[in-house]
Image (tube, rainbow, N blue to C red; front, side, top):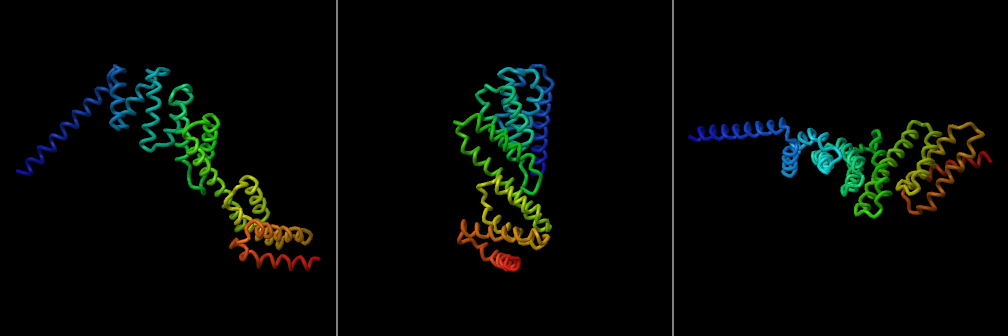
Length: 267
């Protein structure tokens, strides 16, 4: 008996599903675009984003540059965002801002465009093309909508993106050091301090620079050693002045003491 009820239940569900699919296919083939639009809105409101997208895609050209077209473009972007397809969502949010710059939703779409690019930004060890794109979009957003309620959030996300670029550049400096390419490491560290004057890595960078300058001097021709030993000591002194309680001071002290002895011999 229970088995029979199960079979009947499954057949009923299958019938309902087939009827629903048949109905949706009928809607897709319909030439009544206004009806399709209303059904697409209903699917969106019911969070059936896949079916809504199928209908929005068919309606894009029919309602271009109309209030319905505006809604279709915005909700298409939101469908992709809500299904976590951030790259395509960013494309449609950007398309919306370009096509409807005076829309009441243009500000929100501009933020979402930048946010979707933020969501595609990879870890710091990978290529940062998407990170740079998101930074550019957030900077444009902040400049265009300085009074927006989302400004604080935009600045927070922008700082996070810049920190990622800084982290990548810092790791490149360390890589040069490990590869014993001391000239490139020094240049990289100097650029890092110039490009990120408020870096959270300043303490480590000064310590790393002191060690790098020492190794650079050790591997230099005699006439270049003096200035590079002196630079090692200068970076240590700066570290000591700015961070008197830094744990890196003890780590660098043996290297600096060696540099001082080398200078004594040179003098």
